[in-house]
Length: 241
Image 1 (tube, one colour):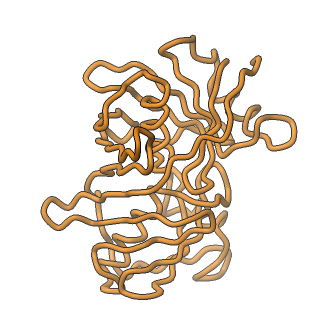
Image 2 (cartoon, rainbow, N blue to C red):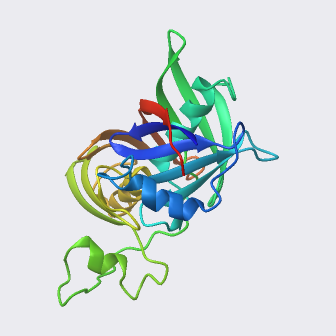
């Protein structure tokens, strides 16, 4: 399988397209094997980029533990760059189908090369305020206990968030299926929406994660959340599965 290792502010995935090659017979098992840092490529998971009627491509996301995720904001930006750089779709505006529905992505070019990417993550499905959870006997504890909390039957990403000012947030992530990661784009979006709903920030902020920063805007006109940040190739290669 030919692949490209890419990351969005250090949230790293193995990307492979099925436009030019067959998909792994068992992508979940492949994700587990390839994501291992010492005996595999090392990544937060595997993302397959597939042809899809009605969109420029479809992305399927398999976490490092083999579980399939609906969407990944950092991965989505990287998918858009993969399609552009690889010549599969040389457009600045793309439509990508995800497990959470169709998403629009815009590439920002500088001298013909991708400089940054903005993804329209859609509108938040719900915003709840003032909910207190207890896990492992504490109201604030480590990510694994909240990931598998009974309130989240399908497990959950956990974002530990601090409002630094009206336009800055600091976030650390415990990601469902991958553990602590350097960043989570969709989690950064959720953190901004939660902070804005609580009046701790405005509707646009710089969200700082261990791997880097994203610009997040909760657009007032239609309620959509826009995420802008880099999508960085690391290396390409070929692996036998």
